[in-house]
Picture (cartoon, rainbow, N blue to C red):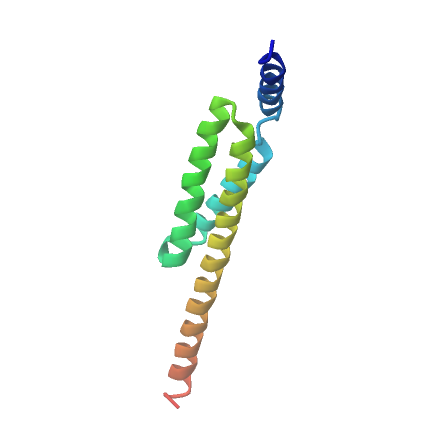
Length: 115
């Protein structure tokens, strides 16, 4: 009789965790961010590549958790994955902009005769 209230609380807590719907929108957002980073050439910049790798690993981990029904943890991991993917995109864009700026400087230098 002493354990009945504890058992009820545990059963209720387990039921609440299962009632959270799969974070499908967050998964799609994280996957889209990772895809964008790949398309922008994140693999060419070490920091961007690192964050892309982290995002991809977290997406994979979250998918496994969703399969197991642990949607709450999957959602938290997908939040991190989305942030890592977004950072990878920004770092890849910065790398591309710096490369374009260097090319433009080189062209200008060639046009002006090295002055």
